[in-house]
Each structure stands twice: as structure tokens, then as C-alpha cells.
Amino acid sequence: MMSQVVPAMSALTLEVTPYRSPFDDQDADLTLHSSDGARFAVHKLFLTMSSPLLKRCLVVGSSSPSPAFEGLIVRQEGGRDTIDLVEDSVTTDRVLQYCYPFSNPVLENLDDIQAVLEMMRKFGMKGMMSRVRSLLVQPVFLEQEPLRVFAIAYRFRLEAETRLAARYTLRSPMFGPYVKELEHIPASVYHKLLQYHRKCSVAACSLTSDFSWFPGFASRWVWFQCDDCVHHSLSWPLADGKIYEVNAWFIEYMERTRDVLRERPCAKVVTDPMLIVEALESAAACHTCRPAAYLDLSTFIGDHFTAEVEKATEAVELDIPF
Image 1: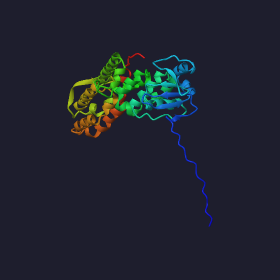
Image 2 (image 1 turned 30 degrees about the horizontal axis):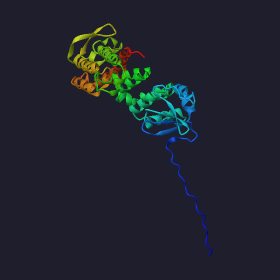
Image 3 (image 1 turned 90 degrees about the horizontal axis):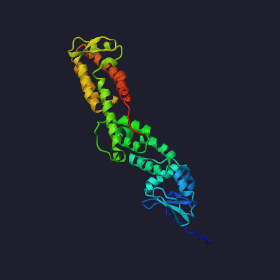
Image 4 (image 1 turned 90 degrees about the vertical axis):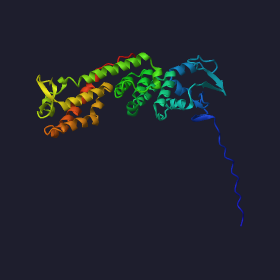
């Protein structure tokens, strides 16, 4: 049996590159060197299309020193223009993904979004910033960290996002925990936000003692109709021009709601189950109120009270400059 000769296989060679994938193209004409030592081989075309400032900086050419802006200087290294950045590799990578025709990077938290916005602002990437700003007002951030969102949005002069975040701050007490982003906005702007919160509080609380906004059929609600319950010592005029006695348990509900609205002037608080349950427990002691209280109170809160709180606070202007 003849032996077979197997030709020797050439050794596989693995090219090790100092550049960070996917920004490692050998044909690139610019190197970005991040603050933590990463290198990105990129194409000037994509960067200059995204950044007028980089276009002005790079258009001079590699044969002459380019004008610096914000400490940015183009130097030669390895036959290629090189820029040293103060930003780290993670932020640089994310901003480059926006500049290239890639899918947008995942920005998981407000720190990530803020870092990307800061680098984009530095390089005048207004078009890119418009693609990031919507991430700032995701429901999870607005509901959990509205003051941080407000401060970040104002820092980058994102007016619509700033005003939306200000609305969400109404869901928290006026003086909440300190957030580091406040250091990046003027004290006058924070003061204006506190004024806005106080004015919204006054507007929302006024609804609990003036019933003129009640709908025309309000007198049919059980707390106006029942004569078996203890009435409050005061009577209230309604939209029909008549004055009505009101059951004490309903006024107590409105007073408790006023206390909550004073701290958190938003529609969400009037639907607090604890406030509603306490009112219904009091109403259940009356054989006339018991069968009607739940439906009437649910209609009052869901169809009217929440909408009026929204209307009252929306009429308050957030008076800050942009």
C-alpha cells in the first residue's frame, strides 16, 4: 500500500491590530486616541459630515498644523492624522456609531446619554444630538429620575425635554434628594423650577376647596344627595348656581388629597388607592352612601378630578430661559 503525502499547510497568521473594532480599517485616514488608550481608525468623511467643527479642523490638511478648538490638535503619527481625545473609549465608540451608518448604540442609563451628548456638543454635532435626545425622556427615566433628566436636558438646551421633565418632577416632593447634574445648571434655573413646583401646588390645591369646576350634573353624586350622613359644617356652590350641603366623608377625602397635592401637585396622586379606600370606608358606614359611593367616587376621580388637576398645572408656565 502506497503511503500518501499530505502537503504541509501554511501557518495561519493572525494580524493583531491596535485599533478598536469595528473602527480598524487600514484605509482609514484619521486616528482617534481616547483618554484610556484605545485607538480608532476612522474616515474623515463620516466625521466631517457629522461635525462642522471637525470639518473646519481637518480641512487644513495633514501638512500644516490645524487650528485648535477646545484644546483639540491634529498631529501626525504613523503617516496618519491623529487626534488625542479627553473622552474615554466607550463614549468615543458610541459617538462614532452615530456618525457611521451603523445601528444606534445602546445607552442604558442617564450617565451614558449625558456622556454622549457632551461629546457631541463639543464637536458641534447638532444633528446627532437630535437622535439622542429622545432617549433622555424614556418613561423609565422620567418616572424614576425626573430631576436628573431636567438638569441634563437644560444643560444641553433641549427645551421640549426640559419642560417635559419639569412636569414629571411634580410627582415628587419639592425638595428631593440631591442629584449631581444640578452642578451643571445655574442656581437660578433650579430656583425657577422650585417656583414652578410651588405655583403648581397652589393651583392644584385650589381645586379641593372650590367646587365651581364640578360638572353640571355633580349634584346627583351621593355626597350631595344623602341626608343620612353627617354633613360638613360648610355648604358649597356648584356650577348650577345652587348651594349644597356636602357629606363630611367627601370633604375629608378632599382635605387629605389637598395635603398630598401640596407636596406632589400631579394628577397621579389623586388616584392613590389609600386615599380612596379611606373615603369608601367612611362612606360604607352609611346605608345610603354605601351602594353608590364607589361608582360616584370613581367617576368623579377618573373622569373629572384628574383632568382638572392636569389642566390646572398645565396652565402654570415654567419661566426659564433657553
